Length: 258
Image (cartoon, rainbow, N blue to C red):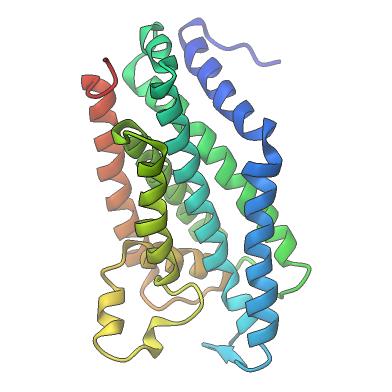
């Protein structure tokens, strides 16, 4: 067992708690999202794949896999952290965490790790499951690694922010249902935005999740609708902004210290 430095034991304990929360309820937190996304691959990929020969010379059943994996990971990282932070506030457990000898960034990181673990577990499971029915591979592993890291940071931190501001479970669920999920579906998961007529193609470029989907697709398939540098750059810029927002909330204690 690796010894944890004394000044990092609080962070390790909080991260372990958040990870245990995910793994303890694995049927709900991991298995259910994997099954739902895998059904999308089977139903849309195999059924429409017979009618849509290919997209950008890529078989349709393989073309939709990166976007579906990204969509599942986005929802997992966000939902896990939003619900965890809101529950900690609602049950006043957050008061014990804030009273512990931990720095603000350690509390922020510890609460974020659960969503990261959940997103990575879902992404890995979906990748393995998709290999059973599609010829998808990993064309650019470094790009894929960067895209996954930015995804986890961006939406894990967004979940923490929303969990801090939410007044009820309905609030953080509404953000997922009204904003994140529609943007994911409209982000080119099932189609190439280059096939859309004007002005819908141009409007798609205003969708932040579009760039994340494109970065994931380039990592898996080596093809995307926009340059990969632009996709990673936009996603990284958004991640920096959201991380700074969450860090500011923990540094000031706003809405946390009641």
